Amino acid sequence: MYEYFVIIAIALSIFGIAYTFFTYRNKERMALIESGIDVEYFRLKTRRQSIMLLSFGLILIGFAIGILTGFFFEKYLLENHNPKEYHNYPQAYISMVTLFMGLGMLISYFVNRNLKKKIQ
Image 1: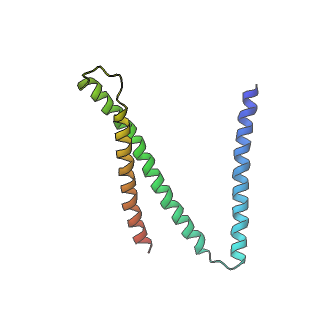
Image 2: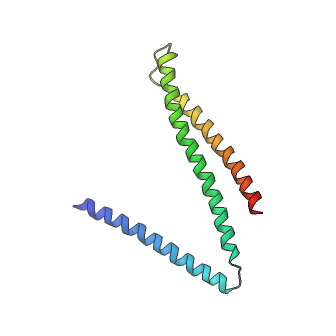
Image 3: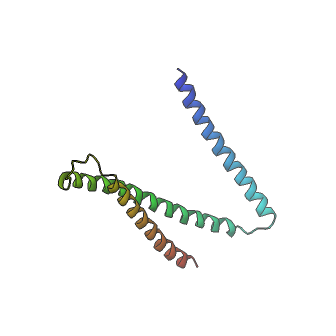
């Protein structure tokens, strides 16, 4: 019975935070527009946020691919190169996650560079 109250409380808290955020953001934007700031300011801010979200998304995709590749790499090492009967190879995960996160960052850099050239 108490579990339902906890779920309802969490949902209401998330709704309250979102409502407060959007309400105050709207009030802040209206005050800035009344003070004379151009509306283009908000569009530039949105572009920067989208570039940041793209970078973050590509890094997380690299992280997920790294974990998946690390799993297969570890499985390969356990089946084919296991002279001392190891039970796991954590270096497979560490190396693949860092490798693919780095690749995600590189891809993000080149995509963002091309987007910035198109915007300007």
